[in-house]
Length: 314
Image 1: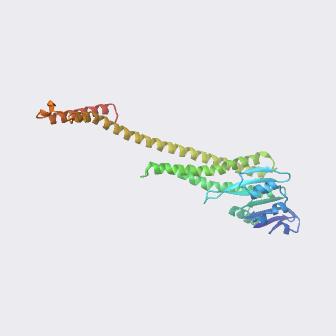
Image 2: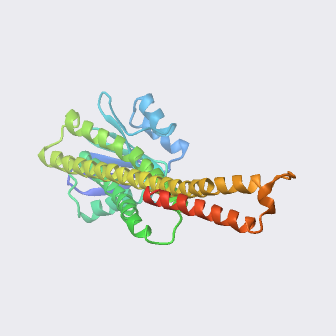
Image 3: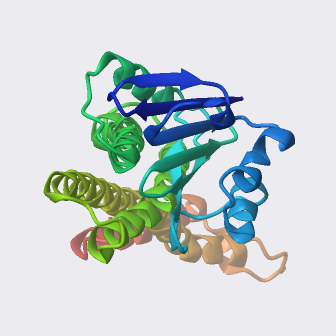
């Protein structure tokens, strides 16, 4: 679907379907291609005459966030984040001095919100670059709920430690969290690099107010990356702690089993000797031989346990 918005010479905001339908002079134009068909996408070449490589990037292949300069326009790829599916949604933007074209294969509610604000005049839009920055700001702000949610999960791990939850469950949950953090990092890190290039490259020729705006967005991305990295470090520490705790418990079990094995080793030897079926074994003729051997075995076991206790082996 194609929607076209433009500002005429009287500073009035008008709406139409195709930019080809505009019959009056205009200051600038915004064309939004929302889930466009192949025929609708042809307007990128037929009307705007964009470079074939940028059109191919927008229509054919999933791109990483990037910024590319052409003769009379810039091609920019943003990645929004779907909080339900945790998948990146590509938003392609062509922007020149008097036009901006947004191209997205999925419906992006925040772009519709910007349209409503544009007509309600709740945001100040004087040129296409203002629309670009508002879209970018909205995309970046939508990362925060996901990051805050993961951060809360990480902080709640200490409380979960007091519950009756197996170590395996906790470690599995930790790996799930790290997977989610990896997803958001794959989105935020390239966006952070992109916004830094846009801010420092001077290609967009931003005025003072717009420069402050993109600096604000860049600060948000830096904060998000710090939160993601901090959460990754915390989950790594939690994972290592629980693995160490599990190893410690396993070592204690093995130590106790070893102690029992050592204690019963001489007892087993004595029982094995007197279990041999030889005819000439004088001790077998003793009246109290059985009880004497039991006492000897008990004394050996007690002595060994005392020695192990003094050595703090258990």
